Amino acid sequence: MIVAQTERLTLRRLTGQDAEFMLEVLNDPSFLRFIGDRGVRTAEQARDYILKGPVESYERLGYGMYLAELKDRHVPIGLCGLVKRDYLPQPDIGFAFLPAFRSKGYAFEAANALIKHAREEVGLSQVLAITSQDNVASISMLRKLGFGFERLIHAPGEEALINLFFVGLGQR
Image 1 (tube, rainbow, N blue to C red):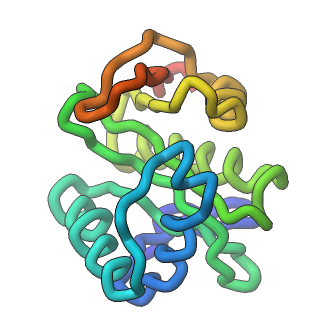
Image 2 (cartoon, one colour; image 1 turned 30 degrees about the vertical axis):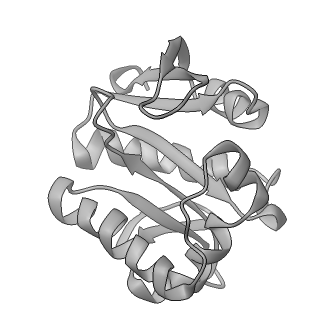
Image 3 (cartoon, helix red, strand yellow; image 1 turned 180 degrees about the horizontal axis):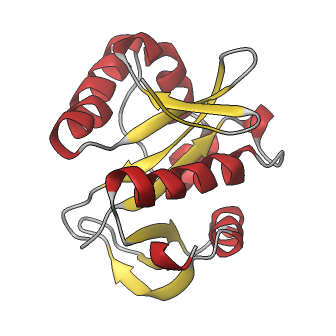
């Protein structure tokens, strides 16, 4: 199911058939460093991860993490979506793109489309974002998207403080 389209990208719901792609993203060194190790090492584990994570979120909340693919060739290049964490009052935006598709504006394009979707289709008035303090690329993109830094917070189970950002969707 297509959630949003841009000039170059389609954001769509993930399915179990995206397991090989998800496996690649979850084991990318940048994902492991900045987002975390999800312990997914096989295609079967990746399929379960999709079904118990994003697919369950679509059914329960009406939103989740989406696959970003090149619109003209249907090539999966990254993830961009909304995640509802127990320790945050509002959903936060998440994104992860494969190395070959970074620094080309795809993540910004996908995130902009996602924010519009969050406002117009999901009905959110605010979206949060979290990053590690040393994730300079994500911090820069969040600022470009209009997110403001709110404060440092502790995520459950994490030692290091992380950045919490927010954007009000009525101002876009």
